[in-house]
Length: 290
Image (cartoon, rainbow, N blue to C red; front, side):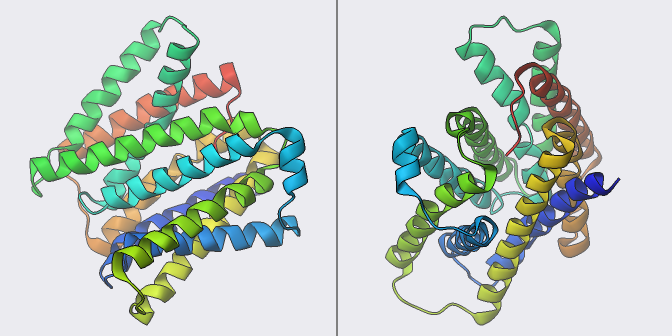
C-alpha cells in the first residue's frame, strides 16, 4: 500500500506541475524561462539526491557521452513541445494526447525490429486515432486545437524516443541519468530566454510560481523513482495513468476547463489504447517508464 502511494504521489505532483503552466503564462513568463527553472530545479535536486557532482571519467569510461547528449536534447525538445501545446489547447487534453507515447513507442520498436503488428495493436492504433479526432472537437476553433494536438503528439513521439534511448545508458542509476541530462537543457533554455528577451526581471509572482512548479516536477520524479525501485516499472506505469486524469480534474478546478461529451469519449478511447499497449510493451520488452 505504501508503494502504491509513492506512485500516486508521483502522479499527483507531476499533475500539479503541469496544471500550473497556464497560470504561469498569465504573468507573461517566457516558456524558455519556465523550462530553465524546471530543468534547473530538477538538476539541483539530482545533485542533492546523488550527493555528488559530475563524473566525466565514468561517462568517458562507459562511452556514454553521445547518448547523454542525445537524451539531453530529447528531454529539452519534449518539454518545449508540450508547453507550447498548452498555448493552443487545455492542459488536461494536452496531457491526454501526451499519454499516447506507449502506443507510439510500441509502433516504433515494432517497425525498427521488423515485428509484424498483431490485430490488437492495429485496433488500439485505430481507437487512439479516433479518440484524438474526438478531442479536436472544440469551441476554441478546429485549427487551434489541431495545432495543439500536433505539438502534443510530437512531444509524445519525442518521449517515446527517450524511452527507447534510455537503455543505452543503463550503466547509470536513474538519478544519475537525471543529473547528466538536465544541465544542458537548463543552460540552453537560459540562453534562449536571454536571446529572446534580453536581460530583464520578470514579475516576481511568475518566478515564484515557476519555482514551485519546478519543485513539484522534481518531487514527482523522486516519488516515481521510489515507486519503480520498490514496486516495479509495470505497476508504476499503470498507476501513472492517474496523471492525465488528475490534470483534467485540476484544470477544471483551476480554469473551468470543461470538456464536451465527444471529447470525454475521446479521452476514454485514448486511455484504453495507451494503457493496453503499455501493459503489452512493458511485459514484452521490459521498457521502463521515465
